[in-house]
Structure formats: C-alpha cells, structure tokens
Length: 397
Image (tube, rainbow, N blue to C red):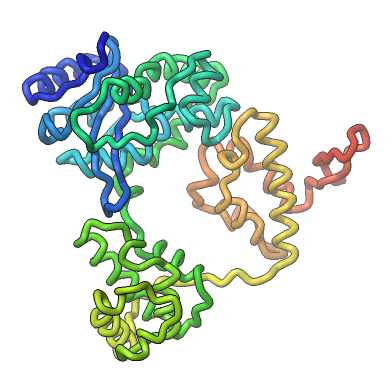
C-alpha cells in the first residue's frame, strides 16, 4: 500500500482509529519529534501498528491527541516501543492527562537476552528477526508539510516489525525465566516523576564544569534557577540561554557591576547586553541573601582502596553478566558499583545498599550473596592458571 494511504490526517478518522485500538491486545508506537532550538521537544508524527499494519498520525492536522489517551492509559493493552524514554516523555507532555501504562521496551528486553544494553532497532531486528530496516531518513525534517512518501515509509518501518519483535523477545524472556527481571527494570518507564526536571542534578552538572569554591555555590544555585525560568519562557534549550561552563565562571567571579561582568573571559557576544542586568541582580541577591536550599555537593576524595574495590567489582560484574548473557551495566549500574566500592573497613556491604532501589528484586536475587561475599573477603580474585591472563573468583578458606 502507498504509505500516503497509511497517513491519518483528519479528526474523525483519528477518533475512529483510536476506538478500534481499544480492542487490540498489543500495539506498537513510535514518534518523530524535534528538540533542536526548543526547551520542550515538539511532536510531529505518531506511528502506531496494530494487527492491520502500521499507521501514521499527523498531530498537526488531527488536533490534540486526547482520543488516543484511553488506549495508552489502558493497562490491558501492551504498548511496544523501542528505546522508549524519549518517546514517552514527549507523549506524556502532549497528552492531556500524561498517563501511559504497560509499556514493553524492546531495547530493555534485548539487554536481558544478550543483545547489548543499547542495541539499535535496526541491529536488533536484523539479529533477532533477520529483518533489514531502512535508515535513510533518520535526519528528516518532520516539521515540513506535506510529508514525502519516502519519509512516511521510513517512519512506518519504525513500528512495522515491532509486534513480531515483541513476540520473539517476550517468548525468550519467558523461556529464560527473566520476565520478572524485565518488569522490575521497566517500572520506572511509566512513572511521570522520572521525567521531571531535577534542578539539583542540573546544579551538580554545572558545578562539575569548573573549580567552584563552597562560598560560590549559592550564586551558582540561583543562576541555575534563573536560567531555567528564562529557557522555559523562551522555549529555548538551557544552553542557548547560558551554557553550564558560563554559569560556573559567573559563580566564581560573582560580578556585581556591569564592568566586572564584561571583564569575564569568554563571555559570549551580546550576553551582557541581553542578560547582563538580570544576571547582576541574581548575583547580588545571592550574595546579600544566600539561599538556604543549596543542594549538597559530595566531594569524592581520593581513596586507593575504593578504586581497587571498584576494579574488582567491574571484573566480577563483567564475568557474571557474560555467564548470564545480559549487559554488564544493566547487571551492575555505575551508581550501585560506586556505592559498593565506597564501603569502609568493617562496614557491612548490605548496610550500604539497604533499601537501595538498584539492589532489590532480580538484582538482589542474582548478585546479593556473591557480591557481599566478595566485599567481605569470602570471595577472592585469582589468576586462572588454565587460561593465559585469565581471572577467576575463588572461595577463601
């Protein structure tokens, strides 16, 4: 069928299509959006596949996506997506209620089945199903109308094979008894709070771009808040208003007058004229009335023992993941590894990660006993004499 005939671009057809989806047990979803030069990504196409094949919905023509929301919020309908987080974030912001339930992310599922942690859809379809999908239009301008037939054909390919891929991966997860592992890892996908902007995280990221003394942190914190307000109001990326490195330099210098601001090295052309007075007011206010809610900055001190423990944990995680056939960073995320490696002498590893969301459920089942034995000295790393340069873990005593 001509891809243009699979494009839904009027409201009545869209409403009827959404009603029909309510009877589908499984559907596939993808989106095309632009985030360049915008604070919030802008949605330009929604692709959905059901048992009748793939369809494309033009949100610029059909109006709001409210008719689609009951389907996306229905927990009895599985929504198959690949690398879903960005698509979910766009849909949650676009939908009136912002609710999605029961998402099956083929990328996360693939990580539990030996395909790597961030396997592309093109490679996963090729490796799992022997299907070679198109890649020619990945950089298309989806905001232009009318959409070309070749563009639509490429977009439809993103959902055309997802139902078959879901059936294959879902069956493999069940066969390997890893369905519960996947479900636990995918819980965060549909939690609206996981898509909220974290100003403390933005603050820590900006802090890492420069050598900022503790006394300058209140100024940086206020500048982070100022930039967020301006970027949202202008609908422009944060870095368009002021990059992290500039905010860090402004915090260090803390200029309180125009002359001092203009002496800042590397100040972008036109910044002082556009934002100078606002920035100076933010700095002056932060100096005269320092905020009491500045996020904590944990200073990582040099610890040779922690570094060595981290190296051993990496080796252990790589070997364990290899035996299980899953991605290493999925088995032991960086944050979990750092927390385990930071155990002080005499401190029980299980106390460090007590209540830790990264070490519960399937991960606790797979890692718990062994990793605690490793950190308590009951499990040791040794050279494997049967393999050149090989390493193995052995029990002490």
